[in-house]
Image (tube, rainbow, N blue to C red; front, side):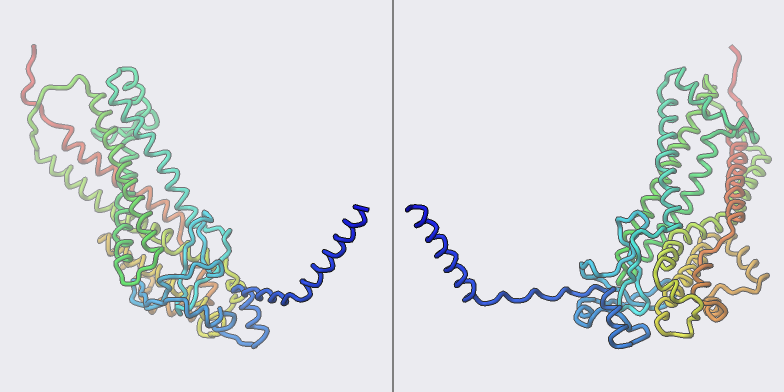
Length: 426
């Protein structure tokens, strides 16, 4: 009897629940998914049949969220970029080589940002990152260890440090004995000059009205590289001096410095060597600016889908590829700005480069950029925007190092070959 009563109660409960569900108002349908930029681009092309730069952009409601500010590059060419991009997953960004820090690339018409594949390989940025990684974790710690060994005042450790520094190069130039410390001092000195010039350029970019966030971020990394160069130079100069003091022990008595007329010749030779070093330094500084400002943008554009779609298209044709060609032109003008910046910092390098341009009948101005886009397609201009002769770059690096070493040797003749006037015999 209890079982029958319980079963009847359960059946009545189910019937009442079904009636309540039938009387309840129907649930509202789920909202349609918001289209992404890729979906909007595809639907815009298929539905309206529009073509040109406006095809496939985000809808007008999204465009109102973008704040556009006027910008200008170093040549005075104006463009626009967002000052506060909305934090949406659909907002196009250009990812860096490490896949973590997004580097936004402004379109020259100021409407949107490029969406680039996150995993694309940035050759120039990767090359610079690898160089500074090796420099930071190899040059600085090794010099610091050598300096600590020479400061230990332990005969065995000081002897080990002295032999390690003199092992690779027993060559002498006058009073200058080439060793690891001398070579590293010359290299770090060259690097310090180049990075200091980069700091000045990055600061000038951030001081402009409406500077992009990436310019401020780039200033941080450039200043970091500059102070790393200063630190390495200080460490290796100190190690060099400590090794000389250890090698010349016991210390000789004080002496008077007598500058003979021949000393002036050595000073003149040292100054002349530094002036000669300015020629290859100009080339190295230019290449450094190209790797920092032009090559990453080139790799981003080559990884974008428009690079394949706009193959064989000239800038004068317009249409959908006009924005792509404008980005390529921006990189060309950035390369031209790098040329003028490097020549501004190196007087002799500027003179020699201008003579070389006159021999080739080439003018480094905006007209040269316009001629390139008239003769070549946008893709071809992009391929050669950071083109450089690696053999010439290597030769300039060696020439700059040799010139700095010759200057060190000349100055050591002035400071190291002194006449001791107060020596006496016991």
